[in-house]
Image: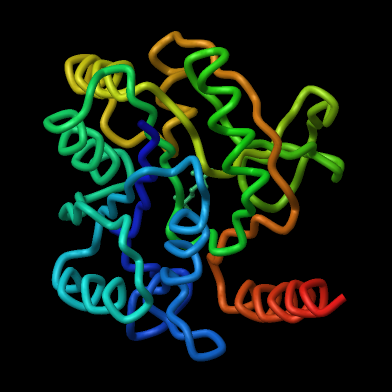
Length: 236
Ligand SMILES: C[C@](O)(CO)[C@H](O)COP(=O)(O)O
């Protein structure tokens, strides 16, 4: 079984809006509904779970009902950071699923995730035990300590930009979270960084520049443009 776990536990402070960014309405649809629909419509996804910011659970269920997201089965409370929220989600799934079932952990604020990206993440997870959606690093990368000046650079060919979904077997990712807690690792940036900090290898699946993460207000303009482009593709 393949389960999508959408992470919607954050308040989206960098968006500077008075509602969490995953619930902002863009072109008459909440952001999270676009993301739910991507997994709802994917034939290899059996169930959806959402880690939701406290107080928004009933709104989420109402949207699932309104937009016919029939695969939504679990809504879990968010934690105090991303690692906490993801752990809440995978521990909840562990109660009802086999350790070999696959969970695709995905940012709820990546609404442009495509069927191809989801399929490739499942394929690589089946093949290697995990899959991190990545894209090449197209810009020159330079390092700074103080945000003012740089004296070092990284070879971009050795770098990947990580996205979501990130796929794992449920048993494995739950064990990694347990071991991380025991080791005092409590605020890793993402599932892939947690795996690496715990000494695991991670494998790549194919992402896209269009699989945008809505972080700041200017990302909303890019999202709107991508929606227009997608609609004109459908009309061709
Ligand atoms: C998981 C992630 O999307 C990988 O690129 C990213 O790290 C999430 O960042 P956030 O700003 O903490 O949501």
